[in-house]
Length: 195
Image 1 (cartoon, helix red, strand yellow):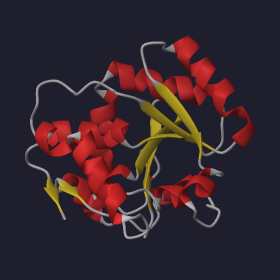
Image 2 (image 1 turned 135 degrees about the vertical axis):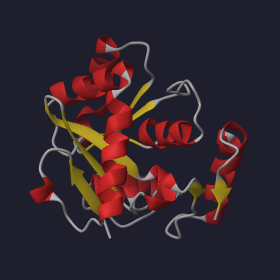
Image 3 (image 1 turned 90 degrees about the horizontal axis):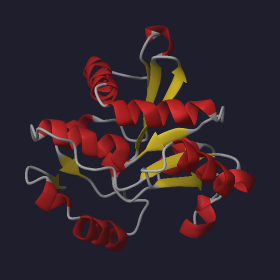
Image 4 (image 1 turned 180 degrees about the vertical axis):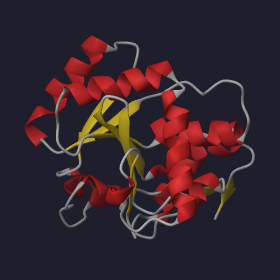
């Protein structure tokens, strides 16, 4: 089941249980407490791209930091922007770097990532996220209007808030294992469990 939460309009909620509503709201609450993340979302919003989200560690790491009760967020190693215009990725990345040069922007076109991953074409950013190696990374947020945000997740977010790192069966296990090791997640966030 795919999850979508619109912060300000519960009528637009699709297939979400009460726990998911609360945790989606919590993710948005965590993001808006960090000026750099809000600035990043606003900057991406200004590009006026359809289906354009900031994904992966931008949200995942923030949730893990919160659940570990760390006083400071971990630095943003990169800011993964998922969009759907294959011809403009580098141009969008350059614009974003002009606005916030201290961030390592990585704009990826999800409409063509299936080629690199040897998958069938993805139908949307959400569909593409459903092929990422770990389920907890398949979460994204975008600004939909001033002060309004939408979170999506390919697998729900309960396991993210349960401090799990779960292999996605659509991705090779060795890719998952390599990412868990090279990213150093278990050392940075010792309460995580690989399932």
